[in-house]
Length: 134
Image (tube, rainbow, N blue to C red):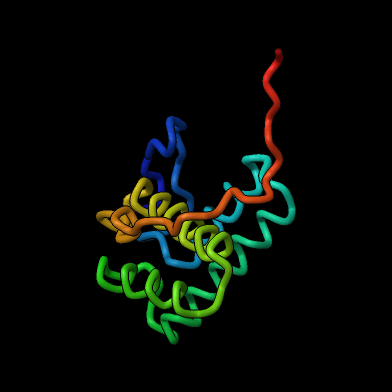
């Protein structure tokens, strides 16, 4: 994708600013701005940033946006065995699904490798319950 290109991202027309193809850094900055603009709480925003740092550490310096489906599946297995609570692992995968889906929508990558990754089941035990009217 090049500067001046008009793209549609999640139903909105966006003009790409800058010269040449979008860099990984530009995609990540745009994604973080999108997360912030979508009325996510400050805690959710920080959790998404932490998920980005965690995946970056997992990639050990390899370009994030070059991750394959095999990398995404391996990362999901890594999270499952890392001792993270299932809800935390689910949120980390959700963040990566969001980032890679956004990158695919921009045309920075051909598809999201995280689209095939299943989110761990999260227990609803202890969650607030709705009462029905009699």
